[in-house]
Length: 313
Image 1 (tube, rainbow, N blue to C red):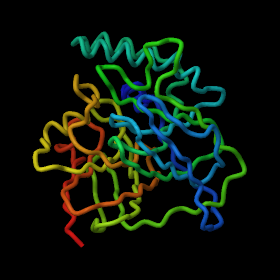
Image 2: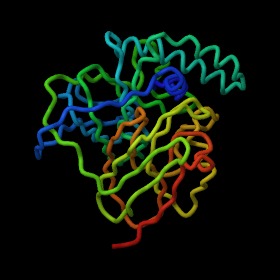
Image 3: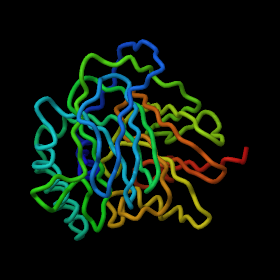
Image 4: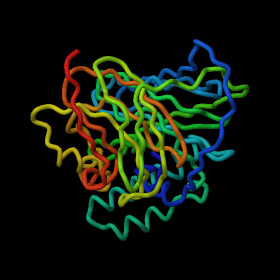
């Protein structure tokens, strides 16, 4: 991952990385979307190496046997996958190992070994947690530059973005956004979600059966107790889903946090973005019980867990 303890990139990023949204150049409307197809095969990404800048839809197909996501990270100039895998992923894994041993002070000291450039990474959304066999979709605006796709879910205590085999990379893929920007238009939303560090998740509109596009507005961004910024994920709740287990699972600092298998069926979402940003996710709902939830500790107490139901059409 790449956010300082927001996992192999989760925590420190929020502590160090300044949030920055910004005005985006207008795009000429067109019926042709700018789509990046991403496939997760076990602990690897299959994806293109380049894409035109502009409004970009990441269509994430999870063909693996475990839950994954694909967070989008804009890298500082001159920094790419090699530096991330050599200087960041091992630091996060070492810190996580110490947390698992009950040594939080030693873990924080280990995270202090992150390179100075780590704080210049900008997290720009990307497809949220997605269950095996499912497809999710997220749309964000990419400026020209170098980006990484990363999954830092854990299996047996090891971040997917870290590979114990030093001769191979973890679940990270480098992608270059090239100029000129495509003319793909900004999506139109059927629902709106506003994320706030003080009010939590606020939803405008009623989810219905079928496909719908959700605009996610990041009113602000701040590190939560696990040092990561807020995001939003869609999860389908079964009759036997333990909500407290789900809430605990969303905190990577816990031994079982973000550890496969997931305690419920995730259907996508939108990963962390800077304050003032707006991104989109497209979801398809069937009748049933669902929840929006953020990857923060105590999501329920922080207003970052919102249950809802969808009635049959």
